[in-house]
Amino acid sequence: MLSEEIATDERSLAESVAAKIRELLISGEFEPGQKLSEHHMAAHFDISRNTLREVYRLLTSQRLLTYTPNRGVFVVAPDEIAVLDIYRVRAVIQTGAVRAATKGHPALVRMRLLSAQGRRASLKGDWKQVGTTNMEFHRAMVELCDSPRLNSVFDLLLAELRLVFAQLEDGAHLHEPYVELNEALVHSIEDGDVESAVSQLEAYLLKSERAVLAAIQRRRG
Image 1 (cartoon, one colour):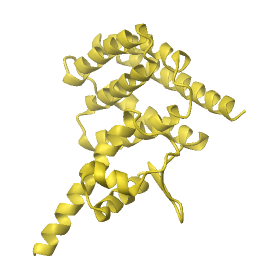
Image 2 (tube, helix red, strand yellow; image 1 turned 135 degrees about the vertical axis):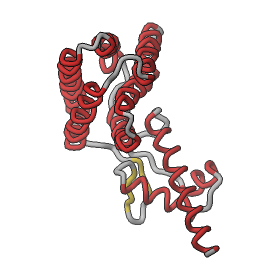
Image 3 (cartoon, helix red, strand yellow; image 1 turned 180 degrees about the vertical axis):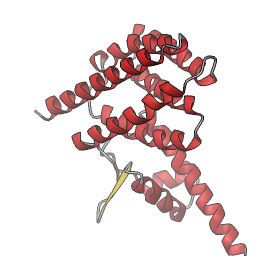
């Protein structure tokens, strides 16, 4: 019985640390392709190496880390195929979220606040912050569904997406167009114009997908 309790506690700790690392990925604290030191990561999170290996196993199964024999564990660098799949899933989840929106929903209020934060960051030229705020904006959009399961799935997508953006130049060309689009999208949802909001979102995601794929191709020459 005691051994089962210990095993359960270790799994819970591993899941908690994995969630923290996902948040760091979403906020841009790790670089694609970065090698993760077992010693430094275990010390940073104050966990044993055995627990850290379970964390790595979880994040590898979620396509956020990759293990290379005789070399170690690395942060993934998503490619074009991953980008296409990420946006395919985003379209399904996020259009459903817009259709589920209700006036006065706390997530909609948060979207409005995040939209304003993104505008302020863009005026300062802080494009990394604009990118982080934009991630939170889309996370709030999915929270309109009131579904913890969808929230968990979308968090994985956001972490992958941030690793896509991290491979590109984090500048105005990548984020500026979406500051205004976020504001317009919130306005349509608040007005209850669902079909307009869905159309805007579909165009938004298509524009973003094409821009990201073009940026990846330019980077690779």
